[in-house]
Length: 107
Length: 118
Image (tube, rainbow over all chains, first blue to last red):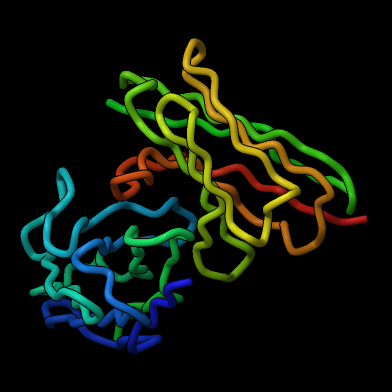
């Protein structure tokens, strides 16, 4: 099973700041990594698929990069609605796995 | 607009059975794999199961293998999760999501809550 480790667990930032979230895979997953956002009480929402492709309707302030085992989600300038939990997920191997999540909270 | 609506959750006793349903609309259902993902209270996301568009391939997490079955009815645009021999560890919100075989999960339902308790 591929283990995805996200860091940090919690990121405390202010609106307008840049957020950098990391996801590390226990073995290479090529570029088969997605990022999801989950706001409290809501279902997850796809942000980025295959490392760097924004899903439909996702603002340009969200970007993804990486390959192999190291991946990054960047939010260029935090808006109030961006404070949420973010999960990475791989589709390289079965079973599909998620990272444990990074909470982006208001500082 | 693609929509997914789950149903069938509730309170169930340990060892019992339950069938979750997910009705899809706004898409050519048979063209897409479908996936169930769960989230235990206060915890992260856990992939549970995926079924291919024609139902010919199914994948299950080890934690539910032998107890849960995924299936679909393309004539009704529905996907199901049959849960048997449930335990406390199966308590979670269960989400239905579009995709998962060769793609990310780009549409999610609102979830249905399953509580296993005596």
